[in-house]
Image 1: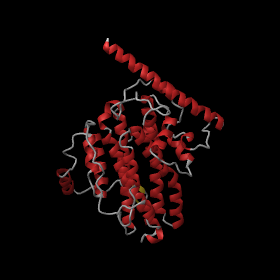
Image 2: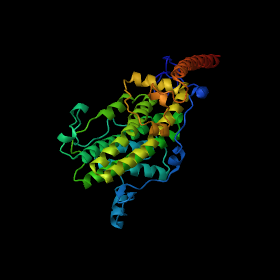
Image 3: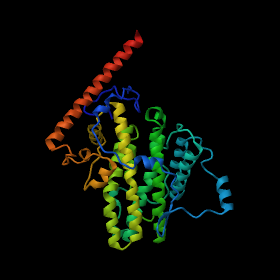
Image 4: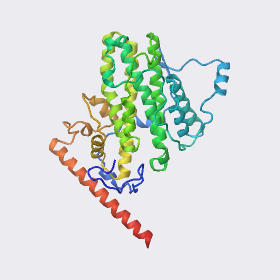
Length: 383
């Protein structure tokens, strides 16, 4: 993705060789937004060990026996990894879902406790997957009545599949963009490793509840749509942030309340409580995406709103309602980014249109100034 509105070849060299870094002078171009109020507390929170869903909600698992603890310490699969990126590659290369979930938590815990560097690693082309579930096109996913699962297990299985993909999506972001840590900064990787840890806990809750209902992950087919969206954005961090947290995970904010209501109507309050808690915690992940999308746009000299819309057009990503405005507002996504009928407190649609035109002008100015700066730097080097 190049600068929105003008395909300028003089942009920040994050992931494409022809890009040239520009100063962060564009901060005045960024549209005002309200970030999630809990972002800093989320970042500073202690390691979350509540990986079991108890009678009253999340709780830590019972402590293992001393003998089992000794065996686990000797067989620690993360022991050979020397950086966060290597730990991420290890998770991505693990096929068994429950092992992947546990390993994700272990990797994040070790990085936090041992103070390992970010490092650099290469992710696998695709994350390792178990033989089941069979991956089929979305249209071939059976309807609830034809799935062989009751409605609550059907919905829970779909959510478990989303959460397993989310573990890999977050670790892939950490590993794939690890060569650019000097530009992005350690906070970027710390945030997405934290997201991966949250997602692994969510998958553990879903798997536990499926087992309580007499089922397991893999009992019905699933689609590979989420990973295909990830592959689309493998070469550009702005695209990755736009497509995954700001579209795919934001859809989770939209769907969460509806799923909770269906489960309550089905009479399964335990599962509905799990889903409600997952939806609540997903706000942090969308907020992280908003924060880093705006940050990268500032570094590139691009306007976030127009860049976001151009990216969705370039990567053929569709925005689908109905939108959960309150959750999206809480996560900090400005409404006019995704909803053309919203003025987002800008007054009226005419004013919003003028704002979009100004954004396009700012994009052009950003690229022109960066070109002039680059020419000046080249002249100084030659002299």
